[in-house]
Picture 1 (cartoon, rainbow, N blue to C red):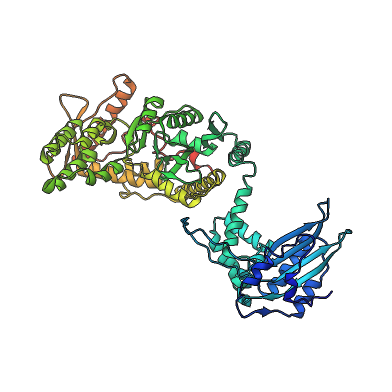
Picture 2: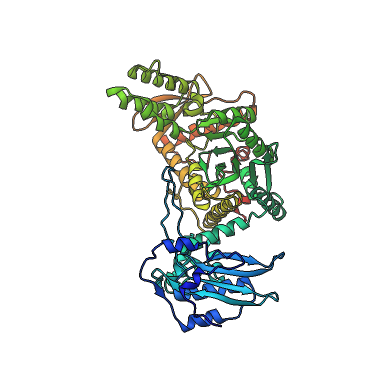
Length: 615
């Protein structure tokens, strides 16, 4: 095979309509090529071209190998066919810098102008195919009109970049384990002795991982997600899910909860936190995790919803699906942000649930809403007292009135709107409901921050679901670790001789015991409780370090439930007797709860045996 061609061959005209790499002869005659011209004469390169080829793929592969050895990139160009046939007659492969860039219209504004990489390089190769399918080289021009790539830069040539099996397997395995693509590529570069020895660039690695992720959803993202839900349901019979579609059959909203989440809700579902402030998928669906607190004071997911919009109808669908899937158990309290759509949905779907607003969101707005001059600081203090420090509705009204007068805020629209819903955010109006001491939705927001690492704004629905599954697995592992510590280590009470504290070590987890011990010691040693003479539901509490501080503590009992009334009053009287015993130097022997009362204790206060089993 003779390769002794010169540049004059570029001017030849072929009968099959050859365009010679998209270069017209007239254009080449007019253009002055940059100097110096680089001519590559290499025996190894010559052997690459002499290798036998049998199809277009092999021809392209051989010329790419030759190009990598020399230091340039390859593009596919003109193809000629035999008359009345789809059989290839000629096939051209050209240098990546062949041709010239079209001039841009200066009147059209563009955000980014790409650099001009075209130099009109004449290098090319033409294969001719006979009627029997035999491939041979007809024309070859090896002259380049630019400096070729150095050995350390050849990995950047486009036609030299490919994803080998080894690199693909390493990237696939590491990213599935949660390692970032950039870190996985850095590991590959270190193992191969530098990026110049790799068969791909960092951009190729990112593109490969993106294609891998897209392959998960070959039949569409929604279909892939539903198929995954079906697989989970086959593995876990308690796994439940629901979807909402529009008239055209497109997915609007979906919700899911697995078996362990449903069991957790049965144990710890009296108080839930609901927040939709984060969107972590490429469809901009809002993520709505429903979060609770377990017996170790850790976050626990009861279910996760994704909503296409934050309208009343979407929230109503989500809450109805949540209650139906979670065995129609309504929570006692739900914490949300100050969203009107959520409020209307809760009012309709959870009529017996106390709706509480996040105090953190409200207090955060205070500095931008109130401007009272020199009295601003005092007004802020009174507002904060109205949020958390008022122990009765009467005290709230007095404090609120003082704040309004001090700041001359009689017609302040924001404060008027807040006062109308004060029962949703002030603790003074929620003494009668179990709330676990929660005042904000920050537990749910922290959940969203954690989910941010598991799912990105470019994630598909399937990826978001799998990422949240990994978050739940990590949380459950933390819960099992705490279960193990509670089983294997005994809690040491602050007062070892106290039978009450010793009894508490048997019924509380480590975290809840520390909270119980603090409250008990403060209540017994720092407070005095006296029962009112005029009412069985009124008690007087005062600090021992300030005998002049006496405030009435009003306990409201549900008159429609005689058993609850009896148990509440009995417990309060025993607490009063215990306080008097401490004051009189007596030693209480056990926690003030009767056998009947023990059956009413919340499982989130006790070590629930069902929660101690491996999951």
